[in-house]
Amino acid sequence: MEAAVASAIELIVRAYIQVGDRAALVGLLDHRKRIAKDLRSRTSFNFAVPLDAVETEIDVIEAGVATFDKLPS
Image (cartoon, rainbow, N blue to C red; front, side, top):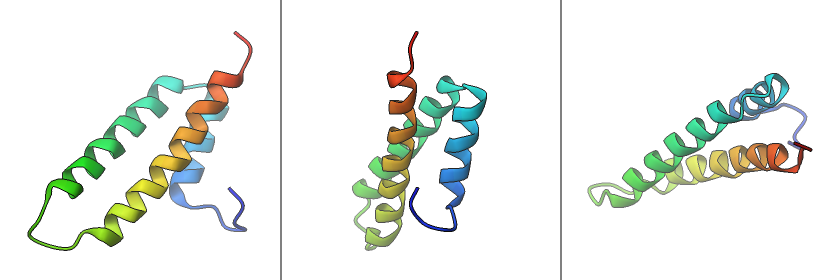
């Protein structure tokens, strides 16, 4: 989250981390992965731009999930 203005997904991930809701974050990750899979399967149009955006969101969400994995139990 290096940019001066955080993206919407970064704010959402940050909020889930603050409230400790790992399950919601994993659900969000699963949803974005389903969207990416759906976009990859479509051949009727070039979905490279939205797919790139979704993959960037997946990276942000995975980083958020990783913070939970680093926390002491």
